[in-house]
Amino acid sequence: MATEDIGSDYVRIFDTTLRDGEQSPGATMNVAEKIAIARQLERLNVDVVEAGFAASSEGDFESVRKVAQALTTPVVLSLARTRELDVDRALAAVDKARNPGIHIFIATSDIHLKYKLQMNREEVLTAAVWAVARAARHLSHIEFSCEDASRSDWDYMVSLLREVVAAGATVINLPDTTGHAIPEEYGRMFSYIRERVPGAERVRWSAHCHNDLGMAVANSLAAVKNGVRQVECTINGIGERAGNTSMEEVVMALRTRKDLFGIESRVNTRQIYPASRLLCQVIGWPLPPNKPIVGDNAFAHEAGIHQDGVLKHKLTYEIMKPEDVGIPSNKLVLGKHSGRHAFVDRLNHLGVDTAAIDVNKAFAEFKALCDKKKVVYDDDLLALVTEESRRAGDYYELAGLSVSSSNGAPPRAEIVLRVGGQERRGAAVGDGMVDACYKAIYQLAGVQPVLERYAVKAITGGTDALGEVSCLVRQGGLTVPGQGAHSDIVMASALALVNALNRLRLGMRNNPQPIDEEGP
Image 1 (cartoon, one colour):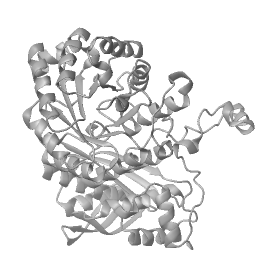
Image 2 (cartoon, rainbow, N blue to C red):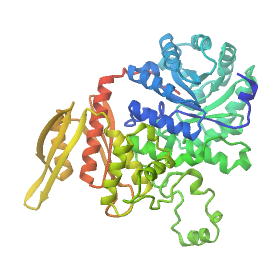
Image 3 (cartoon, rainbow, N blue to C red):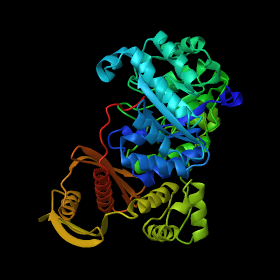
Image 4 (spheres, helix red, strand yellow):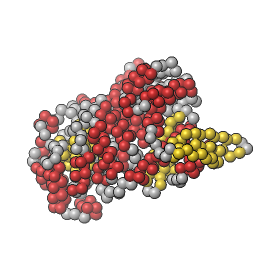
């Protein structure tokens, strides 16, 4: 790797939404959704996309392969353990990528060596060097991670990394796998190790933090202050347990406090909010209103003294501009008299890949929405397009819905469901219209999963607003989300459940084998 590629001119953003982020319970994505997220990451201009763990299942291998083929600018890599099968599957999955890479990891803390790997330090060193050397025969972008680095012996990592760098690693990651570190300690670890590893100046150093103690972003920034030039993160900070480092928070912290850090990323910050919204719609996770950067209240001012100050001069209480992170003004953008060209142009402006959707069908749905709503907002358009993409090519399709409720009779739902192209009709009663609807769908689909979560959110204001429903269902040890959007909340609920059933079927068909190590 050339010296200028290693340089300290900017902080590289390594996004692991599709790998570590997807390991969050209920955040499973299908291949089409992963490609949509990946393309948005490319619009964000992230430097590295970790597309998955190719050896974990055939489904994950296929998704890594397709993401690798879909992207042109970022490095696309797969995670791999220090095993021959893992390394070879990772290499095969990215071999058609424009910029392929591999991310190899093994635990280095004594507690992981003793209880998880049941290996000694010398065995771990040998395995690490072997895996890196094997990968180095095929590609040049090789990242190596000391899993649980923040609880590992620093001198042992120095001795291991000396050999790994000599074997061909070009990026070294010291992850805080369990979210155990604090900023001063985490930053000092990088300084200590970088000073003692021969050839440290020839590799890029990377930080990967989890948020168990709420310090993932602070720890990542402390690493940057200590010479790290790559931060591993996810959109909205999703990830296992309490999550990963939040991409948008790190990027905007570096940009807003460039006076302190003297460096920032090359992320296109105006694509941050569209990326956040897209992920929320794909996995069905609503953001807390007070989520930094992208939450509904991030730029809201209710206190009178704050409102007065902002009206006089925005910088009194706003350290960032909402438009800098791509937050729309929520103004009326289109109406029932708008043409197809204006519709497509607005979707492109919002970051939608119009080549990947049926524009004619989406435009027809837009016209139907205009007849129902007085005002159509950007968020309405995004929800409409996302809903259309969810229905494409599904095994279960909602073809009809009729519900009734009165004081004198229990709520009743009549459903028409296409199952593998065959139309089925059924009805059920329940405690409410949604309950009746769900019971009828279960009967027609021939499944009975456990409904673990059900949530409703109005996408925009007003009684005619589109309603967005998210649910979480579990069957046979597999938990999947479902989402639906419609101006009728019962219809949105039915669409969400049908979406979840399609995900459940797909997940059970792929039948990924459990892995005993989940990564940094």
